[in-house]
Amino acid sequence: MKIEGYVICTPINTWGDESKSPWHPHMNSFGTTATEAWARFMNIAPDDVHWDRKITHWVKCGHCPKHATLEVTW
Image (cartoon, rainbow, N blue to C red; front, side):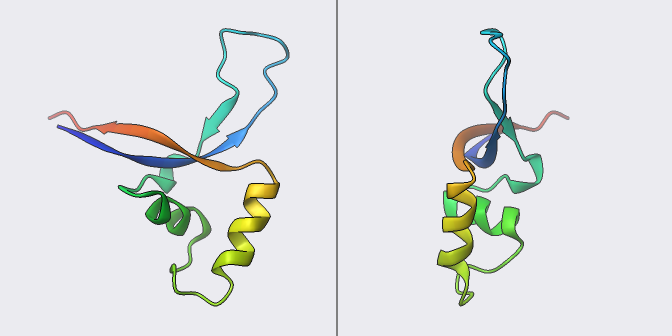
């Protein structure tokens, strides 16, 4: 079973190695929408008073939502 969604990723330095991805995903942030991924990453609800300020902080630090596929095998 495959589930399409998003994870929040951190930029990393690959030191010029083109075979490595420049993004490190935070696995616990997987959500079916980008908003859900941000909520899981920051551990706050989207209706929190500080929601916009906190997302702005993390985006300025280079974090961003990336498309991901979660595959569950039995």
